[in-house]
Length: 120
Image (cartoon, rainbow, N blue to C red; front, side, top):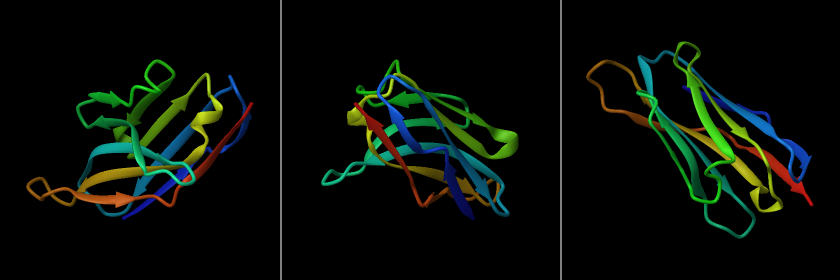
């Protein structure tokens, strides 16, 4: 299983970016996908997550500005980031809970991360 995140970059404050996370490999399904970020000198934190049923959860600092979504047919999750702020600058990682069969326990996988830099 491989996760590949893309869509990061350098933008000015107030602008938008859209991150994508593609899960590839021989799997039964993706149960949930989470977006995490880690700024220099900080711990990695959960930014947003979405379950297979479509339930979402956000950290307070991004609620109302970020939107997480997924395309189950493409095993792809997205993070739409609007009204970006300099404090959103970090490496963003996607995490996926993957099942190999209908009764298997989920396994966690991480993507390599994509840099998001927001200038003031």
